[in-house]
Image (cartoon, rainbow, N blue to C red):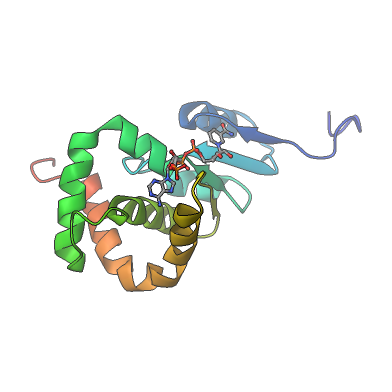
Length: 151
Ligand SMILES: NC(=O)c1ccc[n+]([C@@H]2O[C@H](COP(=O)([O-])OP(=O)(O)OC[C@H]3O[C@@H](n4cnc5c(N)ncnc54)[C@H](OP(=O)(O)O)[C@@H]3O)[C@@H](O)[C@H]2O)c1
């Protein structure tokens, strides 16, 4: 359609598996790629390398919180150990999840949605604390990829 002059630009906004199939199948790279990116997704690099920058990732909060609240509780406590933060601080989990998404998609854009001004303010302020938290988050992301007992 681009060659026929019918469209100028196109992008894909779909699931990870579907997006991966499209990117593997077609030689031309879409102008925009947007995928969901939960905490447990370990192959975000693959998309960042394959898509044109910026890669858009979304739903980092919703996916992780809905998928497995039990394991999120364990990750939250480990994060509190690594950063000396209070594990019961209300914004702790969103801070961890959004910072993790920002680290995984460093050259791209991380989308979130919120209906609350205080959440939007605290999420935006995370960028200022990202460097201070980087080592702890990278440790947790590594642990997530290679849990104890898995070879
Ligand atoms: N192209 C696609 O296929 C596609 C699909 C899905 C989404 N998207 C895009 O991605 C954006 C984000 O996706 P999403 O809304 O599904 O997921 P999300 O941003 O990961 O999660 C949104 C939820 O997180 C909560 N939240 C945000 N900040 C918080 C904080 N600081 N503390 C506690 N809770 C917090 C929000 O509640 P509150 O309102 O209470 O803050 C809301 O319930 C969407 O708006 C959309 O533009 C695109």
